[in-house]
Length: 114
Image 1 (cartoon, rainbow, N blue to C red):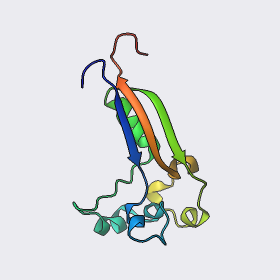
Image 2: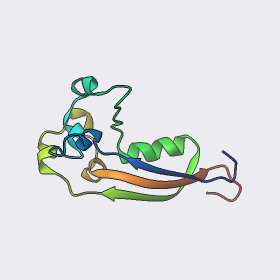
Image 3: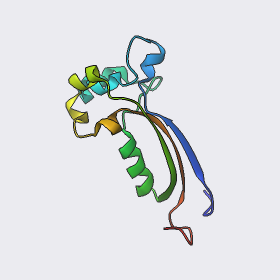
Image 4: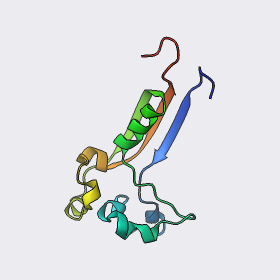
């Protein structure tokens, strides 16, 4: 990436299996532990279960200044919260129920950047 370049990332955080089974929630994967979810992952249908806050942290750690962040937040789903897997219990409801985001960034070391 050029030092004065911009990166635009539109990320879908939802459960991709919803496309095959519309009866499940876009947040269905939040109810599975790492071990229980492992059989559903494959090189053909991988679902990244990172949450919005984790993506933002990774982009900052990779050296990007975030210029815009437009998360698509949905109302908390009580059924999902009741069955929430332990590995997701440390996240806020806002973070858990963010379906995706449009993020714009640039290299943080650009002269004049914060």
